[in-house]
Image (tube, rainbow, N blue to C red; front, side, top):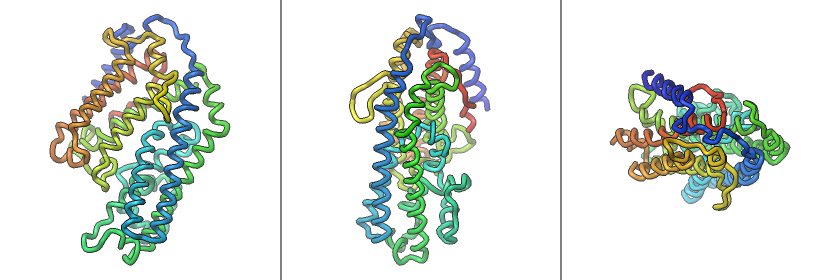
Length: 371
């Protein structure tokens, strides 16, 4: 509670200062062409990343069908590889909770963790479930597949036996198929929306009102960074918001060695979006970075866009010293994991206070620190 109050006081003070140190608009004018930035976001970043994710989901669906038809060790490893490939690209689209994605609560169906092994086993046993219900958020998506592909435990038999001659083999195969099918269906809906009318609606809503695309997207973006990247991937498992550490709440818990990889992929995605980097190339276009440059936004005398990128590089460098398995790192050396959290946290103020203040964008969501 004290930590949350201090954070809010710092944010209020920073916003009220109105000086260069707050990341304010250095020249007092905003002539930046928001529509050009929206076009770059839609055409060169968001839609291409969703198309890649859709391709990865199609492959995951095919690999699932192959494994269900013939549950060999080889097909299992192929399915696991496809799952991880899709999970990595998910990190590039998870922040875009706008349009159809927001309408469907896409993120909640795809990546709520920790998953509930108890619910999954209950559904497998009964054969009765409705994956459209919010009450099943924590029993589907990538975390559920993490459990189904790595977490079913019985040292006495090889893993694929659970899907062949094991007592619940039919139930496991049916549930695995249902989870992947649901993920693919939702993905197809979101991609179709972006490639339909929503793209033009998004780009043409280029004003500066609270409901404009830029204001909305910036809020979605900063909220994602604060709650899902900073808190979800690091803060909650390491115990920042609780009395004890909760290593079982890391992303990719059952596969064990992917939690840091998924975090670093998400950090790269966030930074690439900030810099306007095209999804399929090194080319960059109009972006939050170029917007800040146009505003001559500063932080302690340094260009704000440079300060933000430097902080992310510091977090990335610190991450190199952390175990690939976040759960192990938290259990064996919690202090180092808290150090990584601190590096990620420093960018929250730069984005939420300095950047948004410079762009005259109000925060439209509740503070995530207590989540």
